[in-house]
Length: 311
Image 1 (tube, rainbow, N blue to C red):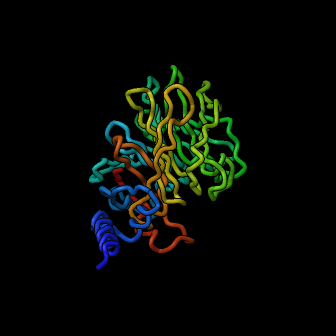
Image 2 (image 1 turned 90 degrees about the vertical axis):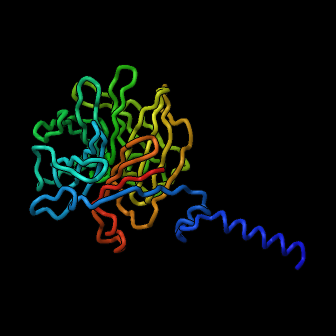
Image 3 (image 1 turned 90 degrees about the horizontal axis):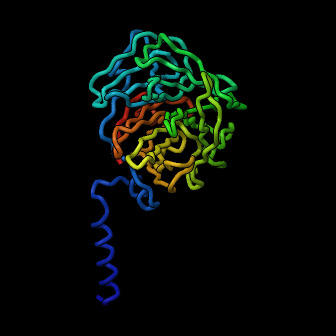
C-alpha cells in the first residue's frame, strides 16, 4: 500500500470516530451544515397532563415561566394552563372558558410593581394586548390597544415578552410575518415591535429587526432572560422553519449584540412549535400547536405538547 493511500485511509477512520455514535442521518446532515441541534429532555401531550371534559383540541400557542410554574395559553380557549416544569402535574387557572375561541398567541409577565400577565391575540387588524391580574384567573381580563396595524388579521403579533428598562415598561411584540407584514417565506427580516406603555395603551417606540442571517419562514414566539450585566438572552422560534434562534439584546439600545446561534430540533416531526420560555440559560420549555391538515402525518407525533429542550 502506498503512503498516500495509507494516509487517506487513516484520515477517514479518524473522521468516522469523531462522529457521534448514535447520530441519525438527519443529525449528520445538520452537523455538516454547521447547525446546532437541541437535546430533548422530556415532553408530554397536554391532553394527558391536564385533560378537560369534552375537550379534544389543546392548541397551545404560548408559554411563560413564572414563580416556578409554566403558564400556557391556547388558541381555542381562554383558560390558562399551569404546569410544573417537571411535566408531572398541572391544572388550570380559575375562570376563563374551555370552549370560547381566544386566538391567544403569546404570554408574558410584568414582575415590577403592577405584576400583570400580558397576552397578545390575533383576530383584529390592530395588535391586541390582553392584561390579566397576577393570578392569571381569567376573570379580570382587560384589553389594552396598541398602535400597530396589520393588513392580515391572522398575521399579527405571534409572541410577546416584557422588559423593564430605564424605569419604563416595554412589551416586545414579535410579528409572525416578515417585517410585520403578512409575508412569509424568508424573503424579509423578522421584526419585533418595541411597545412602550402609555397609560392603558401601548405605542411603538422602535421596530427591532432580527439579524439578516436568520432566514426563517415565519416567527412563532419570543422569550427574554435578563443577565447580570443588563443584557438579555433572546430566544425566537419558527414554526415553519422548525428552528430556534438564540442571541443577546443590548442593555443600552434596541439592538442585538451578535448574530446569535440557530438550533434545529432533534427530528423533523417538530412541525408546530408555537411558544418558548427560558427555564435557565441553557434550558427552554416550548409548547406546540395542533397539526394542520396540510402537514405530513409525522407532525402528529409532536403536536399539542409541552417540550423541555437543552442547548
